[in-house]
Image 1 (spheres, rainbow, N blue to C red):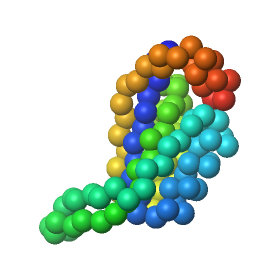
Image 2: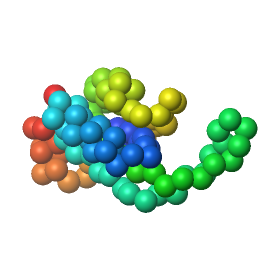
Image 3: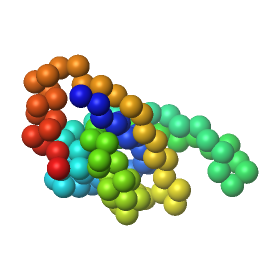
Length: 104
């Protein structure tokens, strides 16, 4: 089964938890993984900055990508949030069945 994984980062644990809960409760994603204490280095306002962030890996059916992105934009605490997607394939048939049952 083909799906998308959407990646976003936030500097707030509370914001990461809020987005993950909203995405799963709405069934836009059956599973969101949160990875804490990643280190991001980036350019902002002509300065190189570095901070700890939380990475969300959001598994989503292709048909829900736009709705998922809108929810992230609505709930994100960054002015310009990083939102990227990647193609993925579920290899486990039992997991694919669970994924479908828990998605819109």
